[in-house]
Image (cartoon, rainbow, N blue to C red; front, side, top):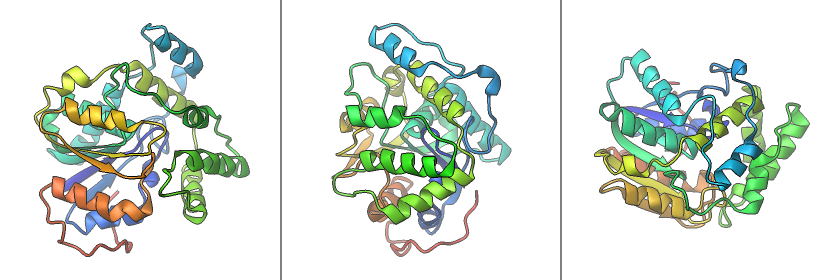
Length: 287
């Protein structure tokens, strides 16, 4: 059973931790993760230049449309192109944050390719939804250094803000993740273009009303970057979507909640939640 994992802003495929993927593989999924365009080792669109994100936020605040080198719909087409290359007719699609938005676009634009949809800590993009907290926005807009000491310091600073109150930053796990991300070549210009795509893609809520795909929405109650109201709005937008709020979770997937999240994804796909032990031992998986 193919399961496509779609990562969020600036996150390469290794942001999906091996143990998390292995736990999904133990449920019988063929786990597929990949680098979105403009991150990791995927295509880098240098010719598009670097967008002025601050100016884009100002235009949106003034109610004016914004332009970006590409949109989330193009990133959704990329993901479907990957399924084509792998000769997969349809997959269970799980996306986090921007990846949840891409997954929503897949359901809108390519419904036959999405068996089930799981949107995690994401949003419909509807105007008027609560915005990120000032601290979270400041963390998001902090430039990403390309030297290791600076990268690690920023990583710690950002995730200490984004982790929820109940699951604070684990320094050892955070540094291990930072090492994996850094090894896959941080690309700040690409992250800026991805963020521009989020800002320019507009409101998906009207189109989501026509989605007839079994949908699960997971959101943390303490998400400072994409507030819980955005997850509630997503669940309300898609007919018969199920909403799963995780108390105290922020804008991350804390290790302590992996069994709960894996259970929810497996149940969404029609798998038994008792099919495999609730352990996080690493196993082979397909990337």
